[in-house]
Length: 465
Image (tube, rainbow, N blue to C red; front, side, top):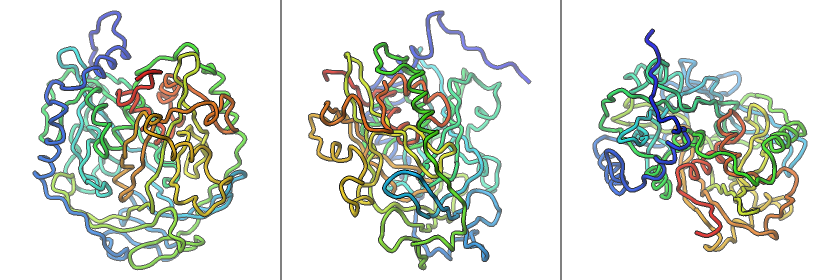
């Protein structure tokens, strides 16, 4: 085996400094001006045939409902299945419930290839079609593939650039960490989030482009341009160091998080999909009678630029748009984010750090005010003078249909977000969260989206704008 490539950097040139230079280049990069990316995406959409059509659940090709459990499986036994789960929790407004869950017991690759051009790091992103995206085509990682996909279970064409993430001799790892997916919908699912730097001459396929971190930051200001998988990878890049003046030391923050994980008692037992309570299956959906949360639907897909150009699959479709928001304040001139230790049934370790507010408001409207999520009203009534960042981003378009959340950073004061917050919340600096994001299962996917916005410079939390 050939030896790994060694990158020759200036003695004082840390990865954080290289990322900062890349984040500072916002208007144009080596290959494409930021203002031209929208037109390039439109061009790529026109270059291929895309079609997504809702179909009946029983018309899914290659999928079947098991006669004994009602669970939905692919005929190969690969990819993923839809099963039931029975959840019991010792806290919260709702302490027991049942629901469908996606079970995908394999680790996928979310990989971004990096390369220096003119001394500045660029990242190779893909114009990728996902059937669940409202606008279908968004910027994704260089490689975004399940284990079933990249090992050829779909019998399609090979995944482009996969060799950079399976052969360690092809480059230098900048970050590599296992991270969770959506804990409310996936059962203990993890993906490998990796950035790999190369010095190779990389032939660029028509559906790929090189962008700086700053260009990606500019694009994160717009709705539904940078997909969830690209955002979660960028969140783990070591962009910031721990800020002096943090209210809690790193050890105090980790200790608090460990206590939060320890004090929650949650069981999540897999049960037959056919037996889950309050869910009813019709020809086209499996959903709740009250219309809350989400429903299982099916689609037939045509995509000219995917490894397989036609297939059908189940998707989860939320019944409302989500809200994911960090409240922030400055203490001693240092920005702090109010993080939540959030329980989700599908997490491997019960609790991960989440934004201050993470919910779909309509799902809580039937409950009295004291039982609704903390700080939701602070976010909902915030005026434009307090909203430092707001954009709508799609969630995982390969598994969820039209799943969108409004992501925000909202400035708060002592009355709205006290120095001593309620149980389950803690103040942390962006640098502390960036450090934790370089380790697995600390930050959930919604927190990582907001951290990616900070890492790429889409939002700044300076005391004065």
